[in-house]
Image (cartoon, rainbow, N blue to C red; front, side, top):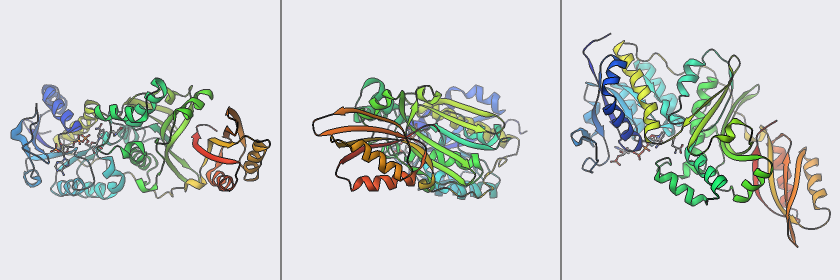
Length: 430
Ligand code: NAP
Ligand code: HSE
């Protein structure tokens, strides 16, 4: 162990997360000295606009010139919290090639270019840690890579986007409109710069791709993930879910089945009795099933300044300890298998369908026969809203491969008695 050393780090970005990291390094200076065995210092901060007023940040540290950080050999840790693919990808690769260690919160980048970055880190024997990239403040990457390494993991499932969970909670419990709830989530710093990634499920898709890769030891990228967002979820669907004793959550699901990996993000009706049903507001939770440990659940704040900074700092402290003990690069990429990812058409789910149909005799029998002819069994049928001309029918299917449901939908498309199918939502359970 090297004594009397100061470990210098540079922040790339000092927005929501970077600002939180800066605060923690300042306020925990003494604690960190004991935890690491040396001092830790933020030596430089890269931003787009170095002239901008930034209350609480030492303006002397600001630079808009990446080369100043890259060429400074005294900087051993680069903390990338600026987001986006480029220039973040290039900066991380250059930092690793220059012998620096990297901590990042950038799931967009890892879910697409994780292999390239990990390979470079391995080549250089440097740390590339990314606990904050999935589920903000919740420890989940380290548990998957280390604490649960003795398991054969078959399922990882969770609520991994704070913005959508916040919106759905506000819609469910306060009757708030989608747009109003989204605005509050943005003001609280949960949402991405472009909230499309949150509400369309892309952010959760990137996180489930990262978790699936680690859990199943096989590379899954964002493009492998089937995603559906929450923009079509209406107050009416939430009301029907309530009648079925369920709530609607946006879930990321990854399963290792005999014939491949299933990896999806979609809204789901989940029983109010399930532990994930009571994970509300911006909280996240991840369920992991391992052959030895059984079920485990990780719960906490999935977004925001200090919760995310907490995860980043855990990685920074780990890296600093590894620097002190000359053992960086200990935990490299763990994707040593090549398991195929299944097509969504081949994945079995239960479905909730809300159908607007003609209010004429025999409609229900016709619908049941189309489903029956395509191998789709019906577990529940509700008819609650009836007008003179139209009726609303809600069905819940038994688990069925998605292609059978799609075959039924193609037939419904050509039937004049079916006016519209405003909601098709998966339902948790066997
Ligand atoms: P943010 O508030 O928008 O801050 C981004 C920071 O990066 C700003 O200081 C910005 O500089 C700087 N920056 C951006 N592009 C740059 C460039 N090309 N060159 C130099 N500086 C640049 O973002 P954030 O919410 O902190 O998110 C940062 C990362 O953490 C993202 O990857 C995000 O996905 C991830 N993350 C965020 C959360 C969360 O709760 N917010 C949670 C988990 C993970 P200026 O200030 O000059 O514009
Ligand atoms: N926009 C993300 C969320 C931030 O709402 O969960 C954390 O990754």
